[in-house]
Amino acid sequence: MATQGGIVFQEKVSRLLRGQNGKPVLKPNRALVLKDAVANRKPKKGEASCITEMSVLMACWKQNNFVDSLCSNEINSFYMCVEKAQADAKNKAGQSNIQGGRLPPKQATGLLKRYPNLCKEI
Image 1: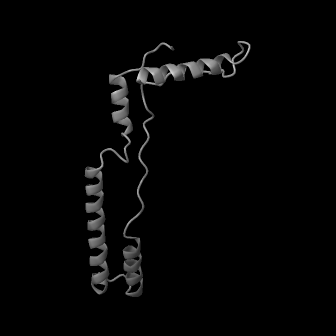
Image 2: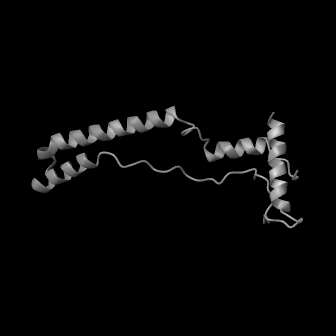
Image 3: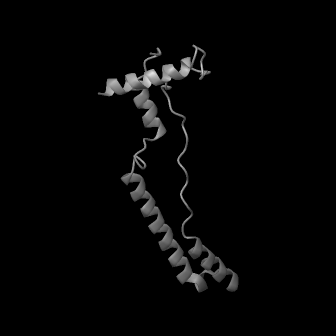
């Protein structure tokens, strides 16, 4: 069944390449074959956390001439928020090595090199 779908696809590609009267409609500038490597892109960074706690802490410092002892509650809440954010990030990183059904670029390249494409066009 999979080979039948591949044959149908190849027929469509050959029809596009031939066009009518034997003139090519589609002129590829490269071979119509997948590469054996994937671009190594870094994943997007997450959003910043603990912004409100940090701004409350800085406002407290400004009101109290940067005396830590007068802003101990704000400092504690900021540090607790940072610890919670770091724990969440560790859980998320450990939990999803494969992000949203996608392989990281290094793993994808490794698999493509292990199982390379056929170099000839069909």
